[in-house]
Length: 376
Ligand code: OSB
Ligand code: MG
Image (tube, rainbow, N blue to C red; front, side):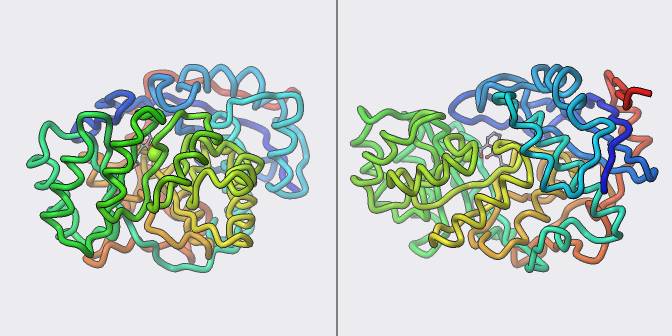
């Protein structure tokens, strides 16, 4: 039985070491929403809401998530008894549309509370089997193909097992081809368009098809499945969906319609661990590979992604770069690291999220906070 008695929200500011450009916007100073949950037994756990600064990825932002958590999510869980964390998602979905990242932050925190209480790692709690995860890097849109080649070459030398290149019309075929030529035929390359194309751009997408990419991620609109199915019929390269997969039903629809052949699972985007595990299981049954995406999380959000990616059907490298790639200093100890073979270790034997939050540092970085408690 789990009963949450308090949720503390905080916003911290954490500057990225370098600005990151995707087709739909640029981010340089992250505003990160952290939660600390407390349960009736006194168990505590930290979680992270991955909503960004602007509504350019999904409709959510840190500000909408703050409102959603305080007004609608927290009141549905505070003081309520849950037999297990897998029961939380349904309660948050009933007559409550959208706000998946806000819901996920609370739902995932409850999984961590259960793990802490049972002195089990999150990875073991959910049935994860891997002790390390192959890591990919996500490279932003660069000024020139040469600048991209420099970054991609360094990434492969550092051991990364997958290099994802952000693309948009005008920064696409020439850039990806330069990387392919510099890194060779065997290099594990992929592209991510974050919705920058339409079917009118078919020629450009077909040109990418000849560059032997592992996959092309979310080329078309954020909520589309029908046009992606049309596109997938014209491409040999697997389409991987990110933004379009917001629930188990959308994953099933992708399979039914043929809109893609791979899914990037981000637990925040689908509403938490419950739906992430359900999508993982459906994909496993239908031979659809999945991998874990990233949202420039701090080391807290990263802990959840690493645990999730330890499930057996996470067979492609995840966007799980080490802390030092994003931050001068992370807010957890130990920081997340990657070995020379591009593997990140799963803390399978540490209870809860497996890293310790540097609370003094979080206090120093906090720009606003709000404490919510179960009604007396
Ligand atoms: O599309 O996968 C994406 C970051 C923010 C929003 C969307 C995306 C991304 C990334 C970053 O690709 C991956 C990472 O955290 O390293
Ligand atoms: Mg993506």
